[in-house]
Length: 396
Image (cartoon, rainbow, N blue to C red):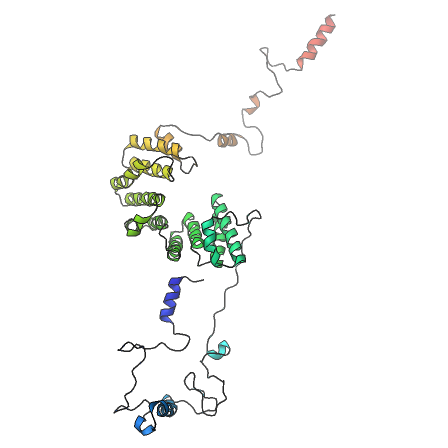
């Protein structure tokens, strides 16, 4: 499916279905000026005064004679070569010449390109029924048929699930399928843009975000668009998007995300101090319970660290740890690095110590077993008790 921009460009460049485009007239009527009939012979060489009658009758006779001869049209019975919509003299009624509307495509001179084969849709997990989708997205899907809306909803839920699971290939397959089935729904195009964004495909993501913005009329995707511009190596365009008048109308959470992108763009340009100033007021006025606080604190701490203020960076990394309840950032690791603490994953260490075939590693045989009990005399086990009893019986 094509978007509205493609449709507009096609309408401006392609001829209308009813015939050639009308040439503009000086007086704005939309039609070419007619001949006055006085001193200006008509195209066929005849004169209106010579044709007899008024223009409605005499002009029609001249069009049949003079114009056809001027065009070099034949006088066959089927009227071939005449203008579209005219019948030749004596020709059968209802038979249109080649190139006119009606008939088979090959008779109209229209040959359609072969359509690409239909792409097989990815399998949707059975536990997804589409009701998990946000109500606002369901509202956008009302423009589709019921069956199509339910199918698209299930694909969108699958996109969200596989993004969480970091399975970007399957997420892309479901997002592309939803876009093929509902390409004019803004939420669908935005979902496809998010997948491309996560995959680092900046140009594709930017194109989808632009389409979603045009379809919805909403500017909430400006932070994502700016981040794509930065990913494409164009930090100046990211800063320009943030300076647009539409950016002032964003919600607070979207403004926070946009400020984080702009701060990174300033650092890309080597403007470290400006990167700190972009986030300072927002960070100091944001409470830890507000949405996006952890990401904002983290970005501000990172900018401070780049500017060389390690003490302030440590403070804001600590705040990010307290605000990051969903573990969106690695603020804890960054804070530990500043404190000189090296974090080691014990599970990875134990897995590395074990031999590939499952046998204990070197030195592991020396460890005591659960079924052994060591005493100070050198390791007689629990099974030594029956021997003690046997010795007592021997003494008796």
